[in-house]
Amino acid sequence: MTSITVVDTIEKKGKRATSQLSDGSSGSLLDATDFETAIIKAVQDDPFVTITELKRMLRITGQFAGVGWWSVFNVLRRKRLLRRRSRFRFARKG
Image (cartoon, one colour):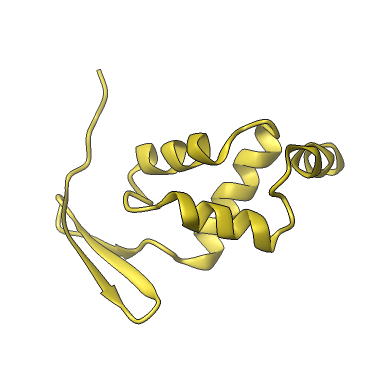
């Protein structure tokens, strides 16, 4: 059975988005270190993963419930991992 996390509100403050989760805790959705680290680790585990699959994996964890396609795209672009070829090379190095 799958667990679902409900997001009550989403607020944007400046360039950072925050959310209020159903358990009452709030967190930064775009925390650079945790968010980028989660994407990098997922790419190392499976270099052929698509942006949509990365987004779905991050949302399922509940920690990054409001992550969007463009935010994952921008992280991959900054790390020069947009092409599957570059992700595969990155995974082989690490």
